[in-house]
Length: 108
Image 1: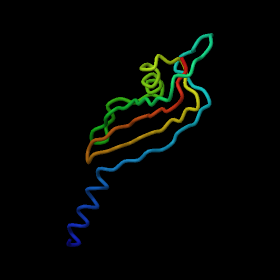
Image 2: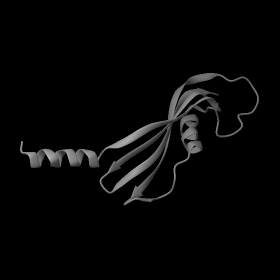
Image 3: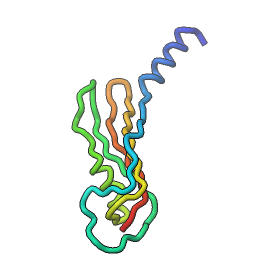
Image 4: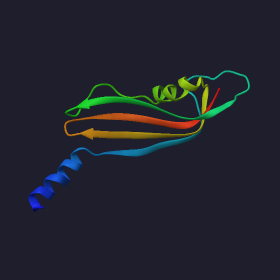
């Protein structure tokens, strides 16, 4: 493999990479007030909120609340416990995404 080809491969890999940063860790979190009552554990869930950008121009912004809802709705949950929030930024040459990913234990 020539040096020029190797440099091309490295540049291509760098142009299609991204990063992920842990933004927060929370004991309890809910996008809305969960209301009274007993809470029943229903497993672990992951939710994401993403928005695209093109040539550096964002096409909206993701929200943590939307990511929480995405984790809670399939399990009919009311709150999350032991929550981690990640900010993810995959990109593909001239376009990419801004995302929030929420992981936690769901309670109904």
